[in-house]
Image (tube, rainbow, N blue to C red; front, side):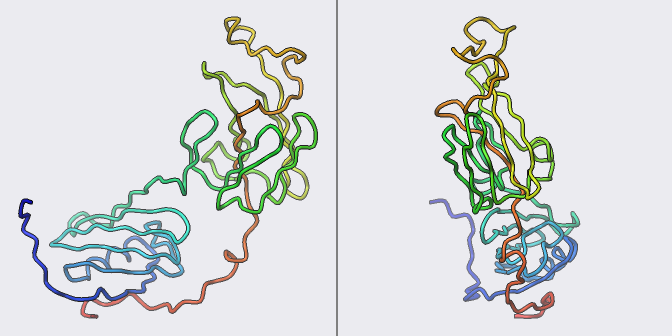
Length: 254
């Protein structure tokens, strides 16, 4: 193996650092105050201005005037942090993983949480963030999503009116129409309808015996509809974890 000039200062066990930076600038100041080497840390009740996650751990290596490391959420998400003394604030790169993305029925990767997959017979699958939601098939083409607060409000899937992904055929044409009603308690009544394409070639028109365009119909067999929902706050989210919160540690601290 080629010698790449590795040297070991024999510094011993890496001690913990509990920090609580409110901005990326404060987080950067803490990193640049560290001596060369590796530094393990936990961010408490803050996100370091978007660089990290509250109540989560990370590690940063500082050599010369450059640094790089990561912060991993205790349940989902990983962010890389990197920079140098001359460039100002820490740069942040978010890693897409199976914890924060979702593959929809068309095979496309989308921002995930919280998502429910629904099949034709009312069977469903939740992810970590939609756990607790349930689905009931009321009748043909009618599904009730319960224990939710409507659709997720952010714009990742198009905002409150865009939280549904439907299956498509091999020609990338949608197989169904969808409509919905959000009930007073936040439950979502989802309706799926047969969808034809009269201007397509005969083989791609999606005709089904006994159904006309716009008739209620179950989700196609073997396919699923993805719904991005808003979940009620959990007890964990409403309760501040018990932890010792310390100020940013000065450079001469060991």
